[in-house]
Image (cartoon, rainbow, N blue to C red; front, side, top):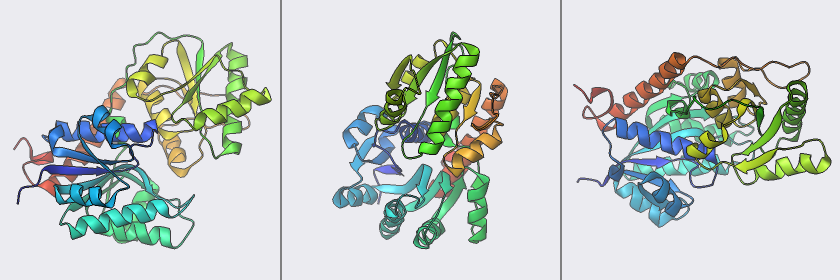
Length: 341
């Protein structure tokens, strides 16, 4: 029986977090590059209407069991497309949800694969159980950092490692430089956000810069407002960035960046901005180490050197190669690495 969709995307999509929306965008573009048209792609989303509008794909409500079943019945494969879907730092809900999707997909004879994932952190015994069981059912497993690959290997699974999926996107680098320092914060990690603010204020004073606040989700605005109300942070402007094009628009007059969120750092790196990270999570720590990005803390006054364009192109190529390999594994020789044969 012919199914309507080749790939059903599952991730933290439709919640208004730019990083996760960029992961969905990267997946769709990589699928198109490998011969899967948008009318053969469906997405599970918390906001199906917005996802349909932004990606040009079919979209189903991730919270409605009937819609999930219908999407799976019409799909050949389900891709866990990027992000840290299996972690229990705040609760077990995420682990249980994606584990449940894998179970439902198997019942519906849908092949499962994972690309650009990170595993953990885990603070319970059930978290890693759900993750191990889910990844054990995947035809192809790809993670974005070394610690996650080590976890897969310890579970007895073969997996591959490649950079975050957003590294496959192109961000303009030819913008006018100026006196603006881009600062990105996120809620829930006051000690880290405080260090980021202190670092930004000190750099601005030393270099005569203005601080421009960049939020990737609506809730992050509260974090900026907290420091502004205390009088410890003065902002030239603040904005919630909701798309890649909006991020490119705020690059004008910027000269460096300090950030907490992984995908803020990824986009700033792709844009060629000197960086300083404020890691709140192992995945951000890993990214900063990989790209030699200094992290906030006592005595840190340096910014990273922007990587050359050829290095970024090579990195995007690694992402594309892993994605092609996974696609070929689930859909066969007509796709992915076999496409041109």
